[in-house]
Image (cartoon, rainbow, N blue to C red; front, side, top):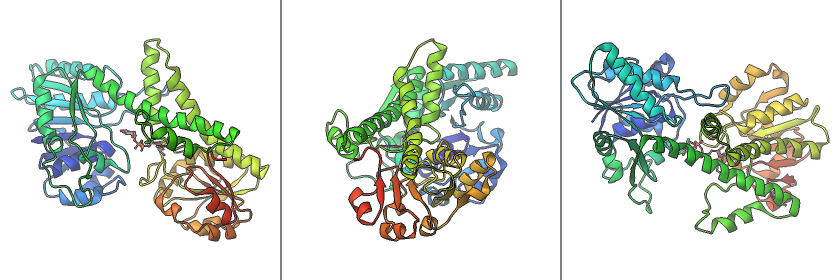
Length: 458
Ligand code: UDX
């Protein structure tokens, strides 16, 4: 199938590469010249496990272009995967989605049918707005045009994007047109029926079942995306709230999570207590959902509370440091992990940034490490801080520990699980370890000489 994908961010690029691997004819459009330069050189502009190899594998078929006129007219299906950044009031800004739809409609041929799919996460009602935008352009061009608009929300998890694209739990399509549903069914057929040969890096999981294609109306499809993200966000916030109480009553939240997770109705996933969620989705999407609700005058106290608990986790870590060190002024704190989660260099809404900003504000010296996110973090922090002499990025974890008053584990990168704790502790001025993700065994850390403090662990 001939496909045009608008936007080559995490969602657009992953989708483009995967659909190309599934033998579709893909042209991806992006206006960002620096991204296009990299893509034309065969380099992925995003850090995502496996994407570079897969991009090289499909290199002979996939095309990247700044031109809608080159990608769209011949396509049967057009996917919009542009960003929906938050506005000042938290609502999602759909300007780029509308603009993409407008530009697509400007180059559609009058005598062809197109399925125009919104993959970006958008407020409820956006698909309807896209229908209107397309019709406005067609009437301006004096043509009737033939476009079916559909919603196909994306459930991509950074760090696991390709795995999730090849082996999704479900595919959701919201459309009022049977033709659009049929086109999307044909698009995803290799995934729905698992007829493709898995890439070597992404073998089919042994217990994997064929994913259902759920079809529904566009508004419900748009709501499914927000509801899924908000539910996962509040599941994490719930266990973090329980973690705080565990600290008060001398219980261990990792045991509690294990115990409740064994109940099939609850499930064990997304019950890891710690520094909570960051990234480009949960903070933005929970705020956007509250924005949608506010427009209807509807209150969502559970979603609001999930956000409050989440951001409190970051403050609580700094409180823990304050309580063991008495003051942060002049103290040297080592930070392990800057990315909002492992296997990505994405630092959007990362807990590390808030924690570092607070430590610097209280007069601490910060030494920070991350396997790949240092350049992004340096950029983000330098924009707001000219306190370079108190903020240092260190490439080696053991060197970072040297002469520090405390270490804080912020992101649970795999290499941090394997650090020699005894060696770390010996480098430090005072061997204090605040484990923000409950990565280490408290006994092991204490045996290695650390004063160990986790999240929700006695
Ligand atoms: C999320 C959704 O998983 C995905 O379906 C959606 O399309 C986009 O948002 P992502 O933001 O990439 O994906 O990461 P995810 O793996 O869901 O983790 C989000 C945050 O929650 C991370 O900061 C992670 O550290 C945190 N988290 C996750 C926890 O604190 N505890 C957990 O048990 C799980």
